[in-house]
Structure formats: structure tokens, C-alpha cells
Length: 478
Image (tube, rainbow, N blue to C red):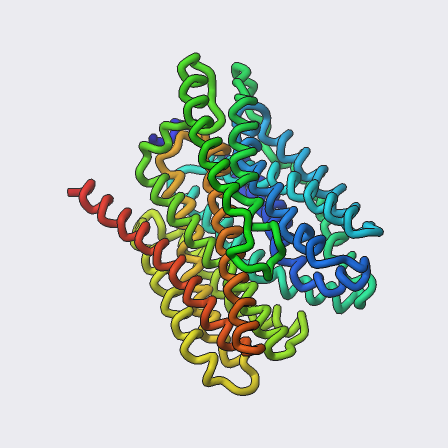
């Protein structure tokens, strides 16, 4: 659907939009960092709180679980009410929960606080894409999403490095607490900046929040994600309660039927089912899901290989991934500027680059001796350059035909698919990684190669979605 016409903006109004974007990006970076930053602190958390593997798993997965479940309802809430208010409440919840995580005295306390922290992140994140969709249009929207994509790439890649620095700074006993406490001053600052720079939408007619739809969709996502967090990261895939996926499928069917009935009463639904008819959106949704299934797991298995296989410290392992962050940030910024000109072809190029980089990593790792992280730096850089061309343009292209008034819910659904894809990818790849470590009697290089094959497969499926969209657009142009 084309953008709504907006009046010409003054110079001050243009400046305020970019300041609002800066506030959104800082908040987005804060929530995304907590997806990966905690991984390097797990050994000290286990020792400091005498936590078992199951509890540690919930510290990692509880955040992602709550985050993923709330994305679509929070996006809908921002669309229907005041987006700035929802954003600020999300920052409040996230900041308080971060302080509680840092002050935790036992594993249960930490696990609960991480779930609440995830709820705060789930409130914040869809408002970011919603603000971008509402505040910008045309090439400026591409540049804004380019900065958002750079934030996603850098936050994900820099998380392990920052976590390693904080753990080293605070020592084995208190370092893991700094990983959480660092969010507190950032959150307080964000509240002041959000109140000053984020726009308040004009109050229109009160919209329905579709409470039944919220419960059905949230419960369905819960049953998708639960099999992926039950049993610990190293448990075999056969041990997961996959029967829960059947419950999720049934709930999604009921959800669709309910949404149709609710829409028939001329009330707003949680998910705009007309999005299914928007081919660019659905292809972008599928591409993002499978790309994130491979993208997220890359960092975890590389960190495990470097730390457990080659005895790298957390700081050294995090530093080894810096070339990816540099490449991703650079190409994401460029991708935002070039997406209007090259469209989906830009995404295809990015997927090809990251596929080539992963194949080369798989080939050369068994041949390397000494300074492995340094020798892999050029391939990490190539993978980062490819990854940055995927995330930003895909978000822009997927939302390009979505009505701005539904931007929060549409963006929330995109990010929910990414979180689900990440959870599925991490669960499958980690299980295969540890199974190969056990069967090969500690050969971490073999385990890395084995799990990389699955990661590459996910990226290639994403590439198939990209090529399908290229063909569709070519036919449309003809």
C-alpha cells in the first residue's frame, strides 16, 4: 500500500526525526545485546550462584521466550494506543528487570528477572520499526532502516566482546552482574530522551486490542518455543517435547478463525490477515526466519569452538568476531542507501556472500594451526559484509507495501518470525554440535564443520526465498 501523503517538514522537524531515530536505535541495541552478551558470562553465573544446567538454560532462553511472545501484541498495542508510551513503559520494565538480574542472590531470582527483562524488550522492539515506518518515507526510510539493520548486526556480533570485557573488569565473582547493571544508566537516560524526542501520535478513535487474539497467538508461540528451551542446550534433538508443536499448530488454526470472525465485526485484529496477500511481505518473512536460524547460531558455535576447543578466553573469542561486526555495520548502512535502487537483488548478493564465507570457513578450519581467530578474520569480514546486505534491505522491502498504521504489528510479526527462527536454529545446531563433540571424543573442529552444514542450509533456504522474490518482481515489471 503506498505511503500516506504528509505535509512538507521544516528543518527542525527533520532534525527531530533523526534524533527520535537515535533514541530508538539505542533502545534497540540495548535489548538485542542482551540476547548474546549473557552467553560469555554463563560460566561465572554458574559458579557464583551455584546454578545447574537447567537453570542456566532458562537464564538464556527465558529472555528470548518472553521477548518473542510479546513482539506482535506489543506492536499492536503501539499501533492502537500511544507508541511513545508503550516504548517508555518497555524501557522502565527492562531497566528495573536488569537491576534485579544484577542483584540476584539465587538462580530462581535470576531466571524470573530474565523473563521480565524479555517482556520489557518485547515491548520496546516493535515500536522501533513502527516509529521508522511512521516517521520516514522513500529513500529516507531506507536509510533509517539501514541504521536499524546496522544496529542489529553490530549488537549481535559485539555482544560476546562486550560481555567478555565486563566479566574481565568485574572478575569471576561480580563480572556477570556488570553485564546486567550496564543497562540501568542507559535505561534511565533513554527515558529522558524518549520523553523529549519521540513524537506523540495524534489521538484518533480508540482501537480494539483483540484480547482473545493476543492470548491465542501468545500461547501458540509459547508452544513453538518451549520444545527449544526444554532439556538444556546440549540435549539431543530426539529428547525435545516436539509434540507441543501440534498444540501450537492447532492454536494457530483457531487464531486465524478467530481473527476472521473478529474482522467481520469491523474491529481491528491483532494480525492483519491481509498481509498474507502481500507477496513482498510474506517472502520477506520467510527469508528473515530462515536467515536468522542460521545467522544467530553462527556466533554461538564459533564461540564454543574458540573457547572450548581452542581454550580462548571469553574476551579473545569475542574479539575474534569483530571483523563480522565491522563488515555488517558497513554494509548495512550502505544497504539502506542502495535498497531503493537495487531492491531484492541486494539481498540475494548478501546471501551469496555469507554462504561463500561459511563454506570457506568450513573448508579451512581443519587446515589452520595457531592464531585461528586471526586467520579467520577475512572470512568473518566477508560474512559480515553479506549479512549487512540481508537484514536492512529485507526489513525495508518486506514493509514497503504495509500500511504505516499497521507498521508496529507488521514489524512485530517480522521480528517474532526472526526470534522463532533464531530459537529453532540455535536448538538444532547446538544439539548437533554437542552430539558430534561426544561422538568424536572432543573434536571441536569436526563439530564446527558438522553444525556449519546445517547453518549453511538455513542460509540457502533464505536465498531461495530471495530468488523467488526477484523472479516475482521481474514478472511484475514486465
